Structures are given as structure tokens and as C-alpha cells.
Image 1 (cartoon, rainbow, N blue to C red):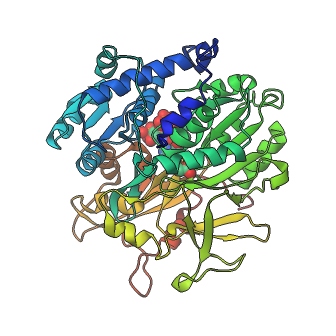
Image 2 (spheres, rainbow, N blue to C red; image 1 turned 30 degrees about the horizontal axis):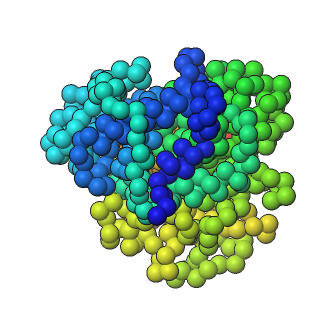
Length: 517
Ligand code: MLC
């Protein structure tokens, strides 16, 4: 029987055991620490043995909220290796969010930063988790102490292709987050397609500067490099000047649009600095055509924009190989091999090219459903198995996908998804608040940010500053509205629905200059 474990496929791309290949540098950190391929193999074996020694049930979830580190990446790989399910959590999440995730996912193991051990372990033990470890970004914590006592030999656990590899929580339109269940097949098939599509080759070096708790950094970037046996230059946080300095040593870079606009603000970003580079990939949020054009002029390179989401990993990409076509700015590119994508209108009818409708997808990369939410899952799939992405777009006359909007109320800020309903729910529960609306407006750094408009109950006074302060205590920092205003009322249409489009228009220029305006 074939072992469908994603780790086995990644491990197979490591250099051969014979010779000195395994001692070559696989990862170099911004601080000059070096990890060889053998280090990755041994450390993941030790961590996998630690997990195996805990006698966890099949399908156990390993929930991890730690700062980015190479060891955190090893823990992800070890979880795959041991056959368990990885559940990464954004480090920005606060108590309310973590309590929900732990309660919903019921992880058998929770790994957190030592600074958060007090409150995270309390929540975990309350939810029935037996094992809570700590892991810090300086290679300390109880997880590594325990793993140090384990053997560095481990046979990769056998899994079936539909066995779960990871659960990624995505915020929900109705407030509650949903855990997207991704299998070994979902992740491996997508990594293999992207490997060919983006022309990964011998000698490639990836600058890894994204967080490793979301699809972009954890799967697209990491799997790309590992499946190619490529060295990574690893940044624990994004520092534009430091990244520019490393460009001459690298060939591949991946980032959200905010990273590209911050790099453009660096005077050191020149054609010479990028001379060794061959691939720049952007995704997770729409790339402005200005950024695409200015990047081309400044560096001589064309950014390859691609499109995907937590539920599906990658769906489309602008072509890299010239024979496949030219990258077209302002588009999400062509449908990736193996993926079926259709644009549908009223009643689910498939629309011809250039007509705008809902984007639906199917393929080996598309998740099987939301964790313990069969009804929600059923709602999001069509009868013939297409997943409704919630994005709205059209296929242009060249076959490129153009995304024009979203059917779901969503703000994408610096590459993170923010669902207004979640934030509005918290605001509406505050004393004295009658109702609220969170709208997205353009922002020069984050692309888009949220502004909260709040109406007080009759006879009550609410303070915008206090609302923001209370949200900060409960929610991840990137979800906090950048501005909050108290209004007499919210604009409504004849049906009584809040007209967010009017509010967006009214506050559109709060953070950007209007050319000629
Ligand atoms: C940070 N801040 C943000 C923010 N990130 N505000 C809005 N949106 C964001 N994304 C705010 C903080 O709240 C804080 O405000 C201040 O900025 C400084 O915080 P920081 O953490 O020091 O910021 P910084 O390190 O500069 O982070 C910015 C960033 C980061 C762009 C580097 O957001 C980032 O790494 N984004 C990448 C997200 C990503 O990987 N997405 C992939 C999702 S996968 P204050 O007021 O508290 O000081 C996906 C699928 C797919 O979508 O297709 O890829």
C-alpha cells in the first residue's frame, strides 16, 4: 500500500543519505542560524516520537499558537510525520478566539508560547486537553525539552490520501469561525502542481518571510521549497530592508501585496539587487495594478499573482512559463491544472466568458468540509460537488480569472481576512450600543482596513475610544477597526438593510489621497 503521508513526499526530496547532501544548509535564519537537512530529519523524528509517546487517538488535533521559528515549522512537519492533524493559530488571536478554537477543535495537544502558558493552558485543560507544551522562538520551552529525550529515528506514519493533515480556521460571515479540513492529498496535489507551474528547479533559494499559521506561508511557500529540496532564508518577522539585503542570495520570494509595497519603499530594491531572482509570487489579497507596474519598472521582474483560499489551497495562477502565456496584471491568472473552475449566475447556471458571477471550484486540492459543521458544509457545496468560494468574478477572453468582488461581506487587510459580522457582534454586545457596521476602506499599507460606525441606544452615550479598547482586549490586532465613529443612525435602503456601500463611499478617502480630487 502506498503511504500518502505528505511528509513522506517532502522527505523524499531531501538530499540522498549517501554523501554529504544531508549536511548542507536547508534553512538559514536572518540571525545566521543554520539547519541542515539532517537536522530537519532528526528533529521531526524526535518530535514525532514525542507525539507518538502520548498515546493520542487517531486523528488527534495538535493546536499550535507560537511565534514563528524553525522549530515551529519542525513541529508542523512532525505532526504530519506522526499522522496527526495540525491546527495552526494566528499569534494575534486573543482569549475569546482561542477559547472558541480549542473548544471547537478539542485538540489532544496544545502548544503555546511560554508567555501565554497561564491563560492558554487553563482554557485547554477546561476543554479536556491532556497535554500542553510551550515553545518559544529562541529554541526554549517544554516541547523541545521533552523531545530531546526521544529517539531521532522514526518511521513515517502510514496515512490514506483522504486522512486529515490540517485544520485551518477561517472567520465566519455569521461570526463563528469554521475549521477547513484539509487532507494529505489536498496539500500534496496542490504542492506538486505549483512545483511544475512555477518552474521550481535545482539551486532555487526561497526567502520565507510570511507567518506560518496560514495557507500562504505554511503551505504554498514552505511546501514549494521542501518539495524542491530548496534552501530557505527564513525571516521570523517581515523586515523589508533586511529582505532586500538577502535578495541577491535568493531566487524565489512570496508575499502578500503589503509586503510588495513595503519592499518598494526601500531604496535598495533595484534591478541589481534582484538580478539573481527568477520568481516573485503575490497572493492572499488583490495586488494593485500600480504595484504590479511599478515593480516591473523598478526590478525588471513581473509579479506572478495567484489566487486561493484556506478551503482550497491554490486555484489559479498567472503563468510563469512563457509557453503557458503572459502574466496579466489585475487578473488572478489561469485555472491551475487539475482544478475545475466555473462562474455561475442565478440558479447555479454556468455563465459564458466575461459574464460576472459566483466562482465555484472542484479538484483534488479542495477541502472535504468544515470541522463538525455538516450543515454549513452542505450549504457551501453544489449538488455536483463544486465549492462556492464566495468570490465574484469572470473569466476574460484570454481565459484569465478576474475577481471583481465578494458575495460575502469580507475585508482583506494586509493579507488577513476580517469578517465584519464577527466584529459587529462584539460591538453590538457592548453596553449602550444599538447597532454597528464595519466597512472596509482603501489603505496605503494594508490595502484595505476596517472602520467601525456605531449607533448608541436612545439616552445612552458610547465612547468610540472605549469601543476600540474593549475590542483590543478580546480580538486579534489586525481585526481592530483603525477608526471608530459614533453616528446618529446608519443609512438604510427601503428594505431596512444597512447600506454599507454608502458608508464605504463616505469614508473611502480617510487613509488615501485622491488623485485630482
Ligand atoms: C499588523 N497590523 C495590521 C495588520 N498586521 N492591521 C491590519 N491588517 C494587518 N494585516 C497592525 C497591528 O494591529 C498593529 O497595530 C500594527 O499593525 C503593528 O503590528 P505588527 O504585527 O508589528 O505589524 P507588522 O509586523 O508590520 O505586520 C504586517 C504584515 C502582517 C503585513 C507583515 O500583517 C503579515 O505578515 N501579513 C501576512 C498575512 C498572511 O500571511 N496572509 C496569508 C493568509 S492565507 P497597533 O494599533 O496594535 O499598533 C490566505 C490564502 C491565500 O489568505 O490565498 O494565500
